[in-house]
Length: 136
Length: 127
Image (tube, each protein chain N blue to C red):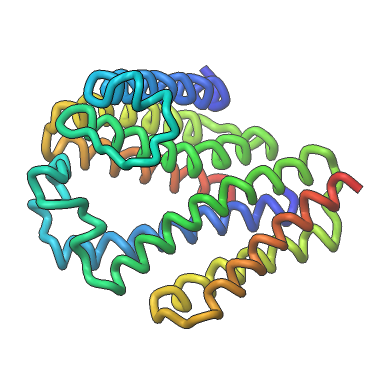
């Protein structure tokens, strides 16, 4: 297992944590009756995401954003690993990605402008650097 | 059947979900709207809306499941346990689709939980 694969595993487990951070307040605020239902907006008076508190809404958006980031990061890790190009630089990029994505959650939850965007950029460019390192 | 074949079958299940969702959209919104640039937001309701949410959830489930399977394959760490977890994931997601489409409360959530627990199990086994 390359270090990048270890980080990928940890990033996926982070997503499980982010899921819990989003799901627990959502269920407390809306009740299991709504979340267990088929969530038809026409019957619930809008989507679930529009009915939660601002902070819970941020946690939902933070989770959705990490799903997108994970798609690119998975590609980067597989390209680096399968092409046998794992090295100190790509390992460092992978860890930087993970640290940025962990920091992203509280920074989003507390609405720290512009830190959320900067931290998002760190994760994004770490992923890009891995992809470029595999090409060069 | 190997984990990677299960991933391939899951890919086909997501495609099936996509076809059903598109059919629902076509029925409620019409071909003209779907082919257009969709500048005006129109939403579907009922079973078509549930299929749309099922599709979104299936894609996010794939974002987590695909790396787990690839990890198992790349690190050559397939065992009976990883195979069982992958099979449980696929069966759960097959159950998930109709239980969401027909609004079977409880079963949908149960199937979702089995799927996510199976995925997390794969990651923990890979570590």
